[in-house]
Image (cartoon, rainbow, N blue to C red):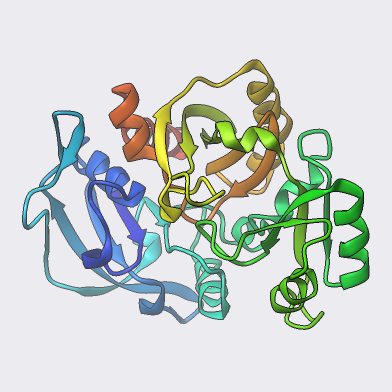
Length: 326
């Protein structure tokens, strides 16, 4: 197979952490060609999606004394070419958020891939329709009590009723801008004004879950099925558990309640073409659905001696095999 990955500049990636690298390495090891491009290198020509693509070869990371170790250099790029994306068997959209104008425009360009020829993961329309905070709201039996609003008074009423809450900007990533907000906070007005841009932009406010002290679980789903998980723990100096906020990770198992949450959301994910997804769960409640560039594979593989990237690429192989005309 020929697989294209739309990523951030490859020299900025961390081969010991980034899931994109784990997926690309797995594809290479399983015998496939790997090509890379960036969102700003996409075009539409004569009604078809094109990209400036480069073949890439990797020196796979190695697990040494419980940690991933990468070679230096760990990748080698070859000559660029300007090619139609439907000459690829599959295209992975793995650009990191924020989902700003340039990100959205890239998904519009990806709409011009002939998906009868090429599998796109995740679906461009699915990504556009699945804000990573808002998407969870449709699964009312799975989420904590939540509001979304830009109205200061409405937010105040909710916070006063719940006592302790978490305020989340709708467009950020990796825990950026998430604030602990409780009744009686003397900074309440300033926090809400800054977060909502003076009432112009809505934010999410959720009931604070005390179980967050025990960790924030990331579960990786492949075509709606959970394939691995890890627990993220705060550093002790920050209430957020995100790895990007200094959190640590630990091995964990998926509970019965979490399997039920996965089952609740699986069919909708498949309908929306959201094949590779990371959900966040705290205390048995779904808090986010990550669809842009979910991460965690490297950590799960290290902790559990798995190879989740292989599972993803093998799923692509099997899916494309069933799509071929008989």
